[in-house]
Amino acid sequence: MEIKGSEFIEKMIDDFTMENFGIHAVLDTEFLAYCEDKVIGYTYLYEEYARDYFIKDAQKRFPEINADIFLWCLFHEIGHVMTNDVWTEADILYFAERKEELANTIKDDQTRFDLYHSIANEYVATNWAGNFMKNHTDIVGDFWKGLQPAMQLMFFMNDLI
Image (cartoon, rainbow, N blue to C red):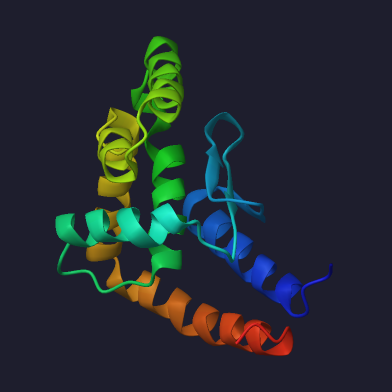
């Protein structure tokens, strides 16, 4: 299914991430980071955990930031790429194994989320996102001033709102 108006938004996001971070951004099925390739994926649909847990954690850690959940998720993924060079291959393997273990063993959503986001690379990516948004309000604000109305128009054009 084609999403009317999406190409403009995809270009806007990719231009922003390339210009400011040297990272490509592509529409995907979820928010994720391909750190070695300097690519992030994003989606217009949020999984429940993002609404229920991630945004609450981010706002608790950075109460001074009043940002949309889309921005938090996008900048969190950028944070993964921007901080990836501090981790060794062994660290990265450990993080992946720990995340898989949590997904397979912890049934309580809040507990699983808390443990997942206490894994060092997740914690650091959120810190990077919050610190960037806090220290670059002009850049983030200008980006959102263009992106938000474009996204709202896209949702309207596709009968999503």
